[in-house]
Amino acid sequence: MEKDGLVLVMSSTEFTDEQKKGLVDLLVLGMYADNNLDLIEDEKARRVLDSINFGSESARQYFLDASFARARKYNISLEATRKYIGDIAKTFPTPVLRRAAYGVLEDSLSSDRKIADAETKLLVVASEEFKL
Image 1 (tube, rainbow, N blue to C red):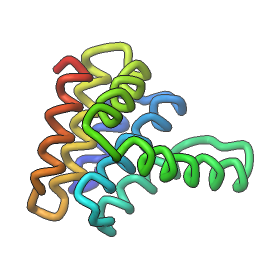
Image 2 (cartoon, one colour; image 1 turned 30 degrees about the horizontal axis):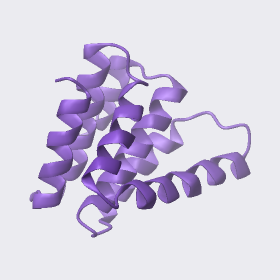
Image 3 (cartoon, rainbow, N blue to C red; image 1 turned 90 degrees about the horizontal axis):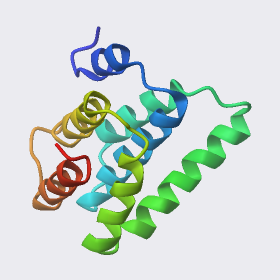
């Protein structure tokens, strides 16, 4: 068990690889929220990424590159962000999974001990779209 709670949340809910991909996308979007790519946030996203079974290293890299591209694309407006998070939320069909995914995002955004206004807005949108 790790101090940051990520392993605890991941093991207690047993996300599928598809859900982990959605979680990586959510965490990457969180990294872009305040236009400050934080190393701690990056590390948390990479830990989730490392737990996904990809067929090859190139498939893993392609997914990661695409995740960053999606985050840049949907970070342009609140409406675009809301739609993107709504699509990600569909990956987590139960309230328990949605709460767990939201908790991982919240933990990541607060890992630097401060949450920027843009990150707070992202958390509000995520809680609404995840129906928490």
